[in-house]
Length: 311
Image (cartoon, rainbow, N blue to C red):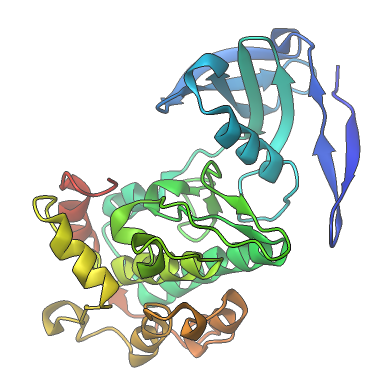
């Protein structure tokens, strides 16, 4: 049995929104192996009994979660459709558990895959970043800010293509209404923009700062702002002052275009930071990134192993 779909009209395009149903999900899907666990959820592989198609089913126990955050994630995923944003297919609701039926992502976390493959080129990194920026431009055009862009929220559709990335986890996202400014301090410290740390009002520009941090890591294997966790004030000072550089040992073979791209994102003043549209027009994302191999995976392995990676 297929779940019916209804149209959701928003400012801009019309999207197909999966309906919420009380139907027993096990009548529709065969539950297979566990794919992973989150803080408040378990992800199970589900096989559609009629079509045989594989999906990832996120099972969330309602009594364990912030229902407001959960509702935000569901609201956003039911409104968006983009090749580089994880797709929500159906929603099943029960008194105790919410089931989100999503496309199956088999490639794992982006940085995990990078440390496996051994090497990749600056051109590949630029193609990957372009896909991320394209998805963020789409979200921003829908008046949606992700607010928590980081490596663990960047998943690969499969293990064969490093550039086929999907943005996931919209639990901290915010739909921006007219004259709405966000003030909640959220996100992961080494990826967040200065205005988040100061508690000032902020908007979608925070996502562009995070993309700058992610791009920096992709090109050298470690973040521009970093501390081992023992001195958070030092880390915050680095971010608030935009205090970073390009050590020659790791950056001498990286193009000037790549550094210029990052320089236009890691700007303390939000209004001077590139928008997603401006970023897409930058030469580094427009085909000028050199096809030169980067020596990143070794450094990234050290960063991944650090206790502070995703706090």
